[in-house]
Image (cartoon, rainbow, N blue to C red; front, top):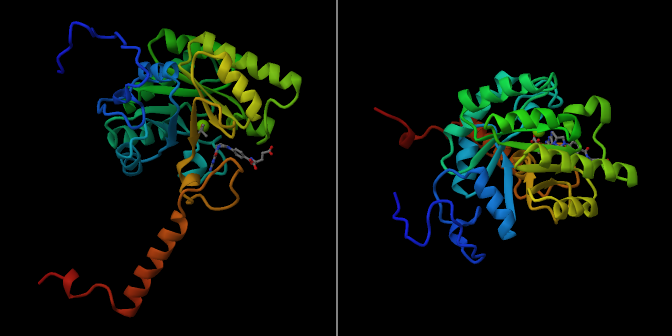
Length: 294
Ligand SMILES: Nc1nc(=O)c2c([nH]1)NC[C@@H]1CN(c3ccc(C(=O)N[C@@H](CCC(=O)O)C(=O)O)cc3)CN21
Ligand SMILES: CC(C)C(=O)C(=O)O
Ligand SMILES: [Mg+2]
């Protein structure tokens, strides 16, 4: 336990913006990040990165790199489990993947997606599903899709002590109804997005993902909320950004949405390494004496 000076009691903020020791990214803290740290970052005007993670090993790499928030996204459906979309993903699958990500990390706040069908029936179903992710997987928060339409679910979870990240704009679990199209274009759609953003903030969400909405509208939402916005295809003025890790590292393959920036080409790295190994085996150059026991 660190000694607390008389001048700084627990929960009392120094109010200094230059105190980088508690920055979400690049800060010195090693304890698990909480939703209170996320709220403090918006007050400091600090931007932060979020990445998805679906397994313990990858999560440990991102945790050691200092990524402060990891999302066990239901994008695991198409990026990790071989489904076409996020729609088939089950709560059992999310629980298993989330538990692995929690085990692989020490510092990051772990947020798990509630999958399609695990909260749409109503607040009680949402609470039962979220409780599973909190108790069996050990995540720190859950995320669910929908603005005004999900506000009762968010309210009950928050009342029950479960931090909720909301997700509005393009909501991929509704792909069968809405497709993968930019949301919030035109005056009416923009007003709906602003109402959705206000609704999730009023319901008690600690942050809100804005997916595939015009940058100007995302900026307006970000200015009008006191909770942080997490953009994906929502321009540079959101408080935070999120990318799917397999997209960002070039592993997903196929055509990328235009909002993805690719920071590596793991598909080639892994494919080339697999071929080099195969050629060694076929050509008899692996294993060598140094890889053998006697
Ligand atoms: N690999 C992957 N990356 C993601 O970002 C992602 C998933 N999977 N699965 C869950 C959702 C679905 N997302 C998607 C899916 C498709 C588009 C897309 O096709 N966008 C096009 C057209 C948009 C338009 O112009 O209307 C684009 O070029 O951005 C965007 C986001 C984001 N999420
Ligand atoms: C794209 C992010 C926000 C997500 O919900 C996911 O990865 O499932
Ligand atoms: Mg998702």
